[in-house]
Amino acid sequence: MKFGPVPVKEAVGAIAAHSVRAGEASVEKGRMVTAEDAERLARAGVAEIVAVRLGTDDVGEDEAALRLAERIAGPHARVDRPFTGRANLFAEKAGVLVVDRSAIDGINAIDEAITVATLAAHKAVVAGEMIGTVKIIPYAVPDAILKRALAVLDGAVRVAPYVRRRIAVASTVLPGLKPSVIKKTLDVLGERIAPAEAAVVQEVSVPHDSGRLAEELRRLASSEAELVIVFGASAIADRRDVIPAALEAAGGKVEHFGMPVDPGNLLLIGSLAGKPVIGAPGCARSPKENGFDWVLHRLLANVPVTRVDIVGMGVGGLLMEIVSRPQPREERPSDAHPASVAAVILAAGQSRRMGGPNKLLATIGGVPLVRRTVEAATKSRASSVIVVTGHQAELVSAALAGTDVEIVRNPDYAEGLSTSLRRGISAIPASAAGAVVCLADMPGVTSAVIDRLIAEFRPEEGARIVVPTAHGKRGNPVLWSRAFFAALQDIQGDVGARHLIGENPEAVVEIEIGAAAALDLDTPEAMAAAGGVLAKAASPWTA
Image (cartoon, rainbow, N blue to C red; front, side, top):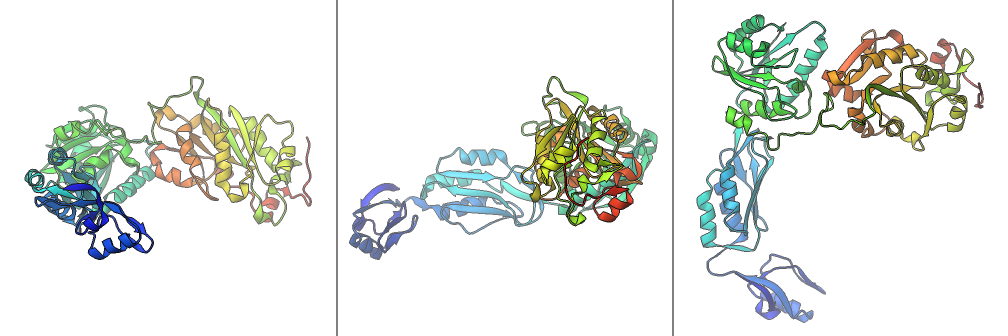
């Protein structure tokens, strides 16, 4: 192959290396130059162009890419039509991508003219998803080099379709484990296995006891289920712990315990009656990616997961931190303490449903509503109190005269609650391990309520979100671990953070506080029922 500048009149039959435009004459990059092209370019004053002329032993880029891609594609992988030296591979079925890494590395080492890229091996893919690409860097490849590459590859990229679709689940229980946790775990699992069109066909809750669990494992293994998953009420700590002991007592085998993927370390894999069994790590209750996903999808696609496979997962096994568990790699400020909790009071709203007056300036027992809330926080165990103002900021600040708080003004309050939340979170001292986020219009939230939330906050034990309930229904205020601050600041619009609670069920501790968790004063009727008096005209208030 020859590459370089040539007189335009000698470029006929060559390939334009770059796009050329002059007046109304043009030739696109990669297109063969015709006699008409050369004549028009010459008339436009173009003397020479950079062009490529193939040799007799060269194979054009599109043909070379197509031939390589077709050799690479294994079962359930199709090759699309090549273009500009590229041929893409796509999954024909949902499943797990299987890649012969040594073959791909081998072809990429043959010559710089040839490159092959794929998705990560064992990634879960859906039908129609692009899984790989062959790209020829120059405009052609010598036939001898292409033949060397073709000799290396043979079905190196394939999709193992999902074949296991019936799953049995055993959940062990201990006193204090709420049924709602098990339900949410099953909901999360349902979302995980939906791409495989799999379903839970057997489900049982059993005491966290090896004997009782062994009985259930035997029963589940003899059912129609093709895969058994055990969610423990307590994480597996040793091969002699309840779940592995139960598996062996049932006649099964523990293939491997532990994996170099974090989160996901405490995963167990075994077998019983010829069916795979997974002892799920605690992080499997979270929808975020963890080591459980890596094993689950392979087994659903009947791709073996051996001890050798698991111990080889370490490189790339450090996944994004999940905020639903303690974060040992997160550096904690030296002056922080688990009980150091700030209070953030959101007091920037426009009180639209009040029809005009600012509800936060309404008085209950002669004290402005916003001041009642702030005083509850300042009298609590909260280490500091931050008040976010916006609408009628001067009047709200005046109502707080003399209180020991930091007032942060939110100029973007009209854009929604999330803007005030971001301002408040950003103002929290670095020494705080968490923050209780309060709405300023909840008169039932006393210092005692806030203290109860703080007392239940144990991030080192996994209690990282403390939520009050009113007769079982979640309300406000909510105490958040610092691990969630970044996610709180990512929220957009006029919404709160309820979705984060739903996404991290294992981090949640609920405490029943009664009507105080649900009483907010949004309407004139609610204000009147609470004994509040709306100001006819806004005016500053001083103590």
